[in-house]
Image: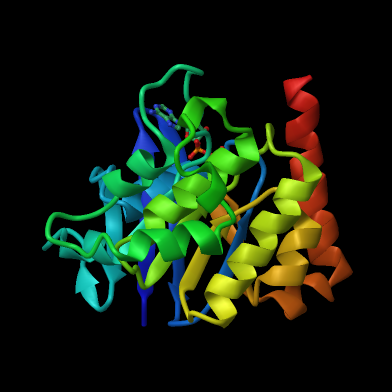
Length: 238
Ligand code: ADP
């Protein structure tokens, strides 16, 4: 078992962000986490990454309670949602990827990873000159340098063009199916989740579905319920 979340509840002052969430992620799973804005996805990721400790319930990684030791973080790669740099930020692509390397780790892996992510030709460029999609791949590379067992990805909603998005999806697929990396991926793209993930977690303060993605996507009622919830959210914002 890679992750076990048991009865996780998070409140911010009066606001209930997560209410009694329980789910598990097994080795090799590709979990698509879907839910409208404000559903609690970032809150859940913050807890999993040890950034929010004010929660109730139990979160385990690799069979150990994350409150007891932070060692598990060394086996997780995290790709943030909006890694946007100023144009003149003084670091190259290679610098940024290298920053992910733990002290004493093997820097020899970097070139292979740059190639795998189609950014080897950009290695000497300033990070701020790259497009959103290219920056996203740099951050995947940075997350991969320590050979993680799990990748946690917060998908950007904007700033990445269609072609880069498709390349991103094929890279995720390959990391999961060829390298056996367990993936936990928050996404707004239902079609892509249907195509790529083998499990779905549908979050909206509570977990209203968690299971095999086939079961979710073959149940029109569930998909409709999810779509209506996110549509309402969308309308609130406009
Ligand atoms: P998502 O990532 O799915 O958009 P979040 O985890 O960011 O959802 O937010 C869940 C709920 O918690 C929302 O109602 C949000 O307004 C609230 N929230 C998130 N962070 C804070 C915070 N630091 N203080 C107060 N409320 C917060």
